[in-house]
Image (cartoon, rainbow, N blue to C red):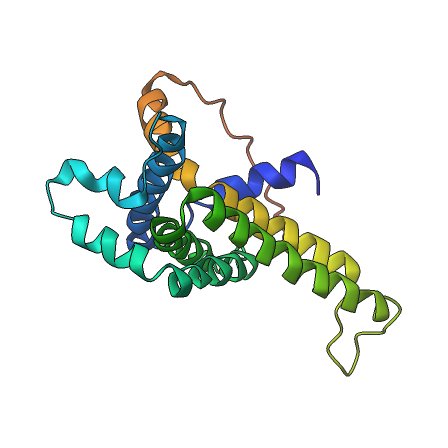
Length: 200
């Protein structure tokens, strides 16, 4: 996959239904604040990030920590959701990040993120191993798992998932800089018109 294709994928993150873009921006800001919160002396949990709202979330945090054995599996489901992300279906990336946030509240940042990434990599590894057996298959009358398609789909899912925390700052920066950027004129497309035959 070339750099141009990766840039194209990063741009297609904002090409989604408006309601989905609003959810993506909110989740992006929450996730990015949680990730950056790990740099503090006392690392922040996902609900610690929301403490500024004034909503009493201590009970929810204690409830999550008491159920760490169950909620940590949400990180595995989150990684599998990341693997299911495509250009046309980007909602699994958001669902995966939300699952990792819930698992992170129960088990901590490092454990939740590593578990999600591991589940995604293991799933893609299994598909890659299965695809080796079908690399010489002719896709005519049956479904086949091809190595090239598995690699392309895996890279697409990884890129679309990785840029989710960057959606909110990216849109804010774009909105801030847009009035100061001059775009070049679009090249005119040549229109081919059929010549009319003269009669007479």
